[in-house]
Image 1: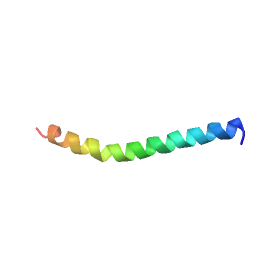
Image 2 (image 1 turned 90 degrees about the vertical axis):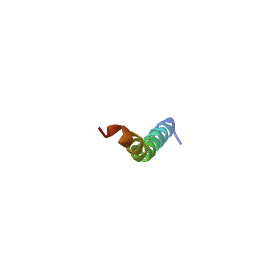
Image 3 (image 1 turned 60 degrees about the vertical axis):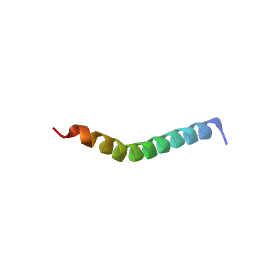
Length: 39
């Protein structure tokens, strides 16, 4: 493995982690915000 391989592996890992966090946090944020969104 070269340094470039390690760099791309790190980029892919971070991107995957961000996607998982975003997909997991969206329903949680919607559920938390729904009581406050009602007038």
